[in-house]
Image 1: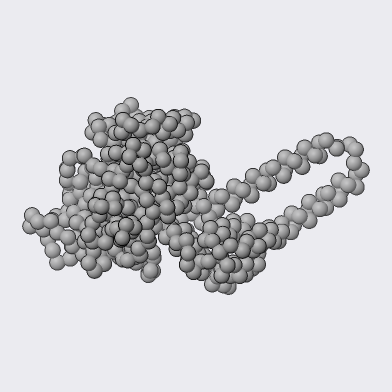
Image 2: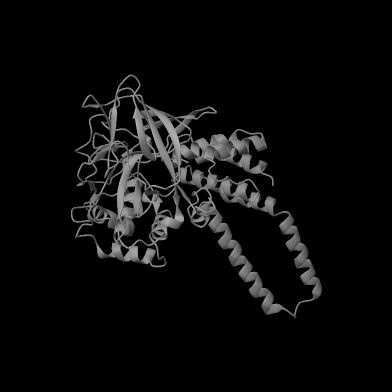
Amino acid sequence: MGGSDAVLQNQSGVNPGGSGETVEGTQRIGYGDNDERLGGGFEMDESPVFRAWAERGHYWRGESKNVYTGHGWDADTPEERAPQSMHYEEGIPVEELDTTIEFAEGRSYGLLFYPGELRDVNVPGADVTPSVDRHTGQAEVHSEGSHLESSPYEVSYSYPQFPIERMRENASSDPDDIEHYYLQLPDELPERVADLAEELTSGHDNRYDKARAVESYLNSSEFTYETEDIAVPEEGQDYVDQFLFETQEGYCDNFSTSMAVLLRSVDIPTRWVKGFTRGEEVEYTAEGSLYEITNANAHSWVEVYFPDVGWVPFEPTRGFSSSFDYIFEETGFQDEDWEAEQTDPSEADVEEEQEEGAAEEEEEEEAGAASVEGSIPWWVFALLAVLALTAFIFRHSVMKQVTLLRYKKVETSEAASFMKAFESLLWLLGFNGMKRENGETLREFAGRVDEAYGTKEMSLLTSYYEKMYYGNKTTGPADWSSEKNVWAGLVKRIEP
């Protein structure tokens, strides 16, 4: 599912068009072109940027940068333009798709946003020539030799499935320009960053698994997604080092920059990418959906270079789920082992907690049984067996009551309490046999739950959850004290 996050700009060097701007000293979420100094909290801004008709929701790519300065990102690649983008090598499985994009009134960026690999651009009523910078991926259109800022425009693009077998092949070396532009690190980068990178990747012998290991680490509970009161490194302090070892909280820029730098520390080429998440699906037809993308959907992620594959995107920001597909070519199956580790926080944290608790209880029971075996009458074992069978039969009811008792007593109105309760609700639904399917958005899942139980409560709670988690609204309608009864009512309805 898509999400929303920030690509924030230097507070003194932002664009005048409302993108990544500063209001009385406070940064506002949005897309801008100055990434020299990252960090600091921001205000949400849901003003529209563009609308897109598409068969499915994707991340919308703007451009990438290659020079990490210790405080932010810059670019030093030469401008090399071609009619099409060149993200992927030949032979990568792709689906040919189209989308129509229309900027909101007053919006102008001087570049085009697009998903996947851009193939062609058409502007109704104009004879245009598209071009894409080979290094940054930034796309533009020109008409009669002049740069054209146009809306609406139609994009033909290829959306890939990245072959895991090929990404796991250990190529002898990368092309010279890849090594030259995408392995750079500042001389002052603290040594412990490289030490952590070695530790995270030491158990893997190929580039793909190393990238997924770093991605998984940043998605873990070691880190917290947060947009308020985010530290800004002081002069001489490294942005990535501060996030990894001191604050361990931040938003997309912190996560994506850290992944890019960690992988470069073990000689894996990366580039930092910014654009927008998929946005909100506001209309649906059999031919496709209408997505509304706002400033609140501004986002950054990472691309990793693989010989014989090309640039492959990864999503390290905790709580975000991209639509990038990594598959085994022979079977067409996705990488389920890694996918299990990368599940949304809506399932992973709660499920892990339940599994660990169950494992500990099982170990304790086995140890106790071994120590008293032979000294307890047979009828005690029979009674225990009956109790165990009863517990198994009524396990769904027991877990429902445990969930209600655990969260209904929480009196705080903090958003975090609501979010934890919602994630526990998702776990309980899965425990009772109703799990999200592969590729199913949270909103689609909510509709299926409401249809199954004859309610509208799941869609309501999901709407609040998405606004809070992906828009990171810490106050608002999804106040735990006001939504507790809605949540409890749905929990009570759940049956296997």
